Image (cartoon, rainbow, N blue to C red; front, side, top):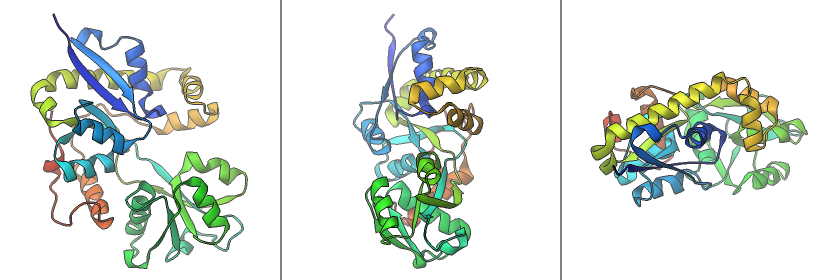
Length: 287
């Protein structure tokens, strides 16, 4: 009997350790599928492009990027929340500066890696969640984290939003001051899959996702989990333990309608998708 090949992709980050463990432990062998898990270091854009190019059948993608891809290209569909806990971004300023409280960032210049990027989007989300007008916002393109460090130190930008674990060393050494945090108001990662693959192999896909969900739950219960995460991804064990206590993988196939609407509104505010109405039914397929 020839096994159906199933190609899954994700970023090389600790969120996807359950898939690496499941493959290593041959947890998919009993499903009748030949599962291949591949890592895509360039992230969301590379993953969604691989789906469109039929290089992958499904991918573990940041929710906002997956929604944007579906709306723009209509070749893939979201089928499951993968990581239901949200990402948390730190709101940073130069430590020696005059900004002491998060309320002080209103109307200040926001450093972003590029227009359309995550730092751009989350800056907009933060303003929306605080009830501030987007017309007050000014953005400064700084390319990357090093560019943000130079911009804040040189007074070319005032505020920088970035994933908090990445910037923690800069807070610890006194270069950045973290004046607040923005918990993104939607699940961190979803599973996006090619429409053609869903229509032909939905049962095999769901079975594989269930196995990965079980592996994720088992990882959370392992006493050695923090050490495993730390050793695999080069983290401090204390930081890995904190991350494990916060992350929550999902075993549900329920559509997060309210969260999807928030993603759509944020992407429209960013002008990454059309302003016309986008129904969550357009981006989600019920397995």
